[in-house]
Image (cartoon, rainbow, N blue to C red; front, top):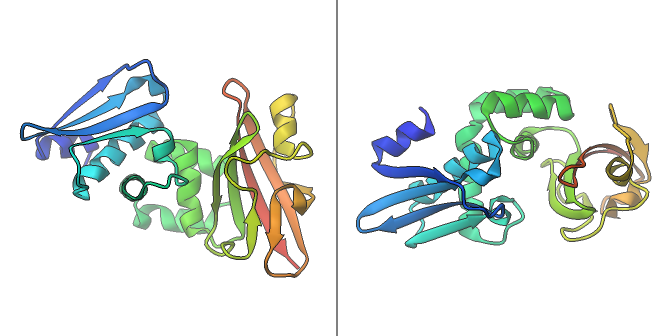
Length: 235
């Protein structure tokens, strides 16, 4: 069932407006016995709009207490520290990419940009949402780091990697020797994973064993953003 049909079935008033604020994503408003969901069309990305609609539906379906939720771009990242926003994000991911439809794909497909793009297109979500959902089920030791103008904005790991290494933290700077940095400042376009010094991205190896690291980065120079995929091998 489409999100818009769900809105209709629950008598939710839905509208899309241009707000002139790229940081504002959408709202859930309860007023005078009515429920209103608004989405900012300044987003200019169908996948992000779709996720915002599902996120606001999450606030409604999870019965989050409050008259109004104004959700920013930061609120829709897994790094947000707001419990209601984290819950709405998880609801949106599970609603748009149901486990029974994506688990087998995530477990068997290569962890690369072709898989991420394919899943994003199939389920009408952004690449960022797709890659984090893939990591929910992937069996390999993989991670993703998102950065904007060299500052780390998103960090995620496959479940098998959690607790085994620490990556650079949110708000930190990417290493000048990383492929991510080179992609951002030059014409480098990577077509696969390349070996890199583990210290470029990993701050602590909690297993104590020797590890090798491979990086696969792609940059969007118009926005200054870079998505970095990492593959960790324990020896």
